[in-house]
Length: 174
Image (tube, rainbow, N blue to C red):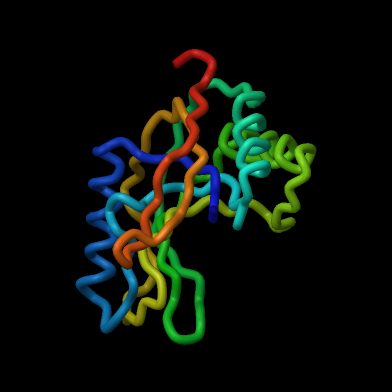
């Protein structure tokens, strides 16, 4: 099962992210744009996991202790790619989010996961393979309070990429 650990959004945040996605889409010649129900912030990508690895990921989440925190989305950017760019919404630097990522990654590594060893760059993917004349831009910041993170699975259902939660960890005071 292809898996990752993510922050899923409330309806207000999701609605604002969809407006950004739709603006990019309406100014694009082509692209593969994120389905509304799939928009999320990946904390840690796990890749293909078997049952024992899912159990380790659940145990890592259960061992995690974190307090609720807030984040803000403040810009739209892109990763340049041949054949079309990846467009995303970016977050203001956030020590609580970075700390959560680092602690969770440590718990997962202790459980035997081999994770990517690159700098955490929190972003929300809005579209892939996008061909547009738009340039990245800053936005009026918006965001939400995080009180839970989820272990997610990724699968194709009737030809559509679908993400669904398989385990949830709530913050200490939620």
